[in-house]
Length: 98
Image (cartoon, rainbow, N blue to C red):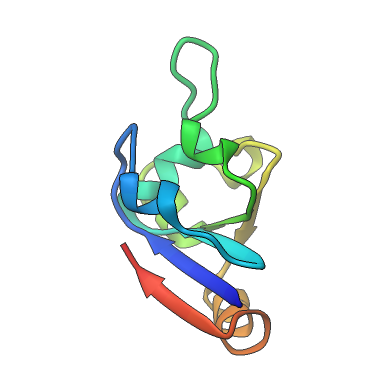
């Protein structure tokens, strides 16, 4: 199964996300979760970025929180709303929000 997971909160651990298994997993960081893409603590990236998945961050949410799309972690692709619709419609069979 190809699964897209919307993550909207910034927390250090997410037990639900840790348990998710899929053939293709996309983690879409929106709202406050975009901090996972742009903030390092003690020089280390967010532990969420250790998951075997593709990562996306919504550019509008980054910018509204004062983060530059140019400074996100290299694992994260910055997308706009049009790209997000394409991901949902073309790349993932199912989406969930956690």
